[in-house]
Image (cartoon, rainbow, N blue to C red):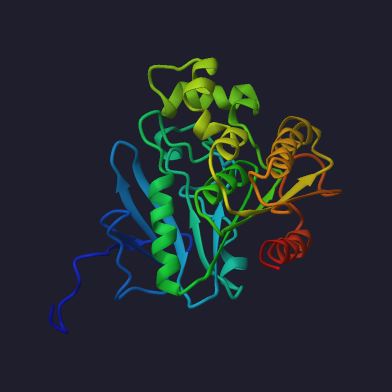
Length: 294
C-alpha cells in the first residue's frame, strides 16, 4: 500500500448523532484494524445470523482496559445502540470499550437481553475477540469488566472466559431465568428464539449461557471479582446475590478457585434496583481495583 492509499478496513460509514464521533465499519471480530482513525469512535461489524455488534472505543495507551456493559434500556426513551459510562470512562486514565447488546435492535419492545444473543448465536466470542485486539492495541496488561444488573451478569460471564481479568459488578442478575418472568419471557418469545422456547427448555439447553453458578462451577476460572450488592434491593439480594455468593464460597472452599478471589460487599445504596450513586461508584471502583490487583 502506498502512502496515499486509504486502507480498505475500517470504513467510515457515518457520524454518531449523539456522541458526535465517526462510525467505523470493521470487517469482522477476527479482522480488526485501527490505523488512520480517530482515537474515540463507534465501531461495528456484522455477526452472521445475529446482526450488527456496535461498540464504542476510547483508544489510549494504558495499563488498564475498562470494558463496560449496559443493563436494561427504556425503549420509549433511550436510544440504540446504548453505551454506558462513556464520559466518566474517557476522563479516566483507562482505555475504554463499551458494547451495545446486539439483540435489542431486533425488537421494538425488548429492553433487556443480557448479551445472550439468540438461540443460534452467542455473541460473547466476538466480544472477547474485540477485547483481546484492543488490549493489544493499547498495550494494556489488565482488563476490568464493569456492569450493573444485566450488564453485571455479562461482565461476570465475560470475565470468566478471560483469565487474569477482574470484575466490578453491581447488583447483577446471576441467573437470567430467575429474573422477572415477564421480561425474560418477552425476550424468549421475541428475538431470542422465534419458535418460542419453554422456560424449562431454556434453563436446560442454555444453562451454560444463562446461569453464572453453572458457568463458574463447570469452567476453570482465573479471575477476581468485586460483587457490590445494594441492601435496599431485596429481590436481587435474595434471588441472585445470595445463591451466587454461596456458589463462589463453595468453589473456594473446594480449592477450585483461589481463596479470596471473590469479594462481596452489601451496601446501603439507592432505594430499590438501580446503579450506585456517582460518588459510590467511584469509591467502589477504587476498592474493586485494589481487591483485584493488590
